[in-house]
Length: 247
Ligand SMILES: Nc1ncnc2c1ncn2[C@@H]1O[C@H](COP(=O)(O)OP(=O)(O)OP(=O)(O)O)[C@@H](O)[C@H]1O
Ligand SMILES: [Mg+2]
Image 1 (cartoon, rainbow, N blue to C red):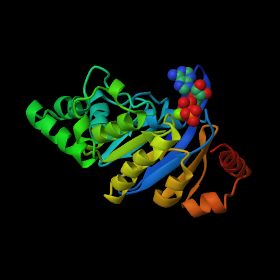
Image 2 (image 1 turned 90 degrees about the horizontal axis):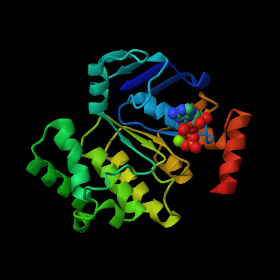
Image 3 (image 1 turned 90 degrees about the vertical axis):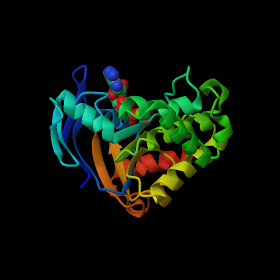
Image 4 (image 1 turned 120 degrees about the vertical axis):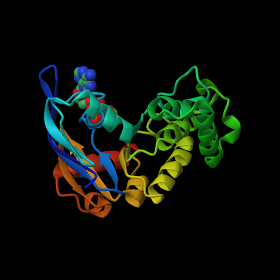
């Protein structure tokens, strides 16, 4: 198992948001997390790389076991070095160009010399068909292009796992396809991914496993067929029906 989380608990202002999550990801899996707004999906991902700090729980990642309530600095840095996150709102540096945004993590995260890092970033952009956009600033790029650069920024770091938090939810519908294509290609290359998304066709076609998250808990998890065609919980059925209406 690449990543195993046990009994992850998190409160905000004395309100329980994550109520004892058990969660695991195998190498090469694409785990799609679905669930209602406010159920704690973002909080879950943020706890996995210490953007947020859990009250309780353990993480087994690669060969290390980490007490999530009191991770050491070294453990946090180590987990961050081997994971990457793609955000709903891209989170690109506004004052850096596309190529600089991608190179940044290589330089500061991995100590690669700047010239070399820029070369790698340029290769990544070219592979995406965004080579001519290398010197554009985020404000000069479409949301879809910004997100694709966000994904390239995560990918060049060669993380063991990439956490995607609603990567297409801020995009105009016609920009969604290109981003999902990048993600699908990554999945085909064997990249391990956890993806919070309501893109059902992506979930159906790419997910190895779908996890339904509601009210701070995992209610059920299974293959796309199990969750979409034979959900076990009424809450899951309700949620899927609301998706069918709204998407
Ligand atoms: N920093 C914070 N301080 C206080 N409450 C927070 C904080 N972050 C999240 N919450 C609360 O935790 C709950 C879960 O939020 P979270 O963002 O994880 O939901 P989500 O499942 O990602 O929702 P969405 O689908 O809308 O993105 C919400 O009630 C939210 O208000
Ligand atoms: Mg969220």
